[in-house]
Image (cartoon, rainbow, N blue to C red; front, side, top):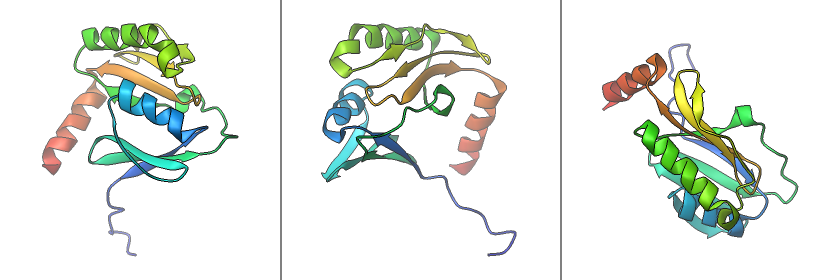
Length: 142
């Protein structure tokens, strides 16, 4: 491989879950993700076809630090508030263990929740320079 060879595209990540059967309900029913669930002790989840997460069952999975979260961008501050209200309302149904209050952090309006497997998810409305740069990068790839 030469120095000019592109590494390609970031395609996926891996997430440990304690019980795939129970975790799938959170991803599908709360987050609205598409799920491929035909491999024992694993599943694949995604919101957009350009990137996906492989969930692998590990009953001894360690807790994810909040800094290592997965981020979900939403269209407005009001949408962040709506997701927050839904998380509070459906907390027990989906096994959500922790929910932070919405606030502005790093110029993005956001909140975090920790799922039943102790993995962190951020819901944010980001209007920062970083968000604009990311949108421009996506547009140039189209």
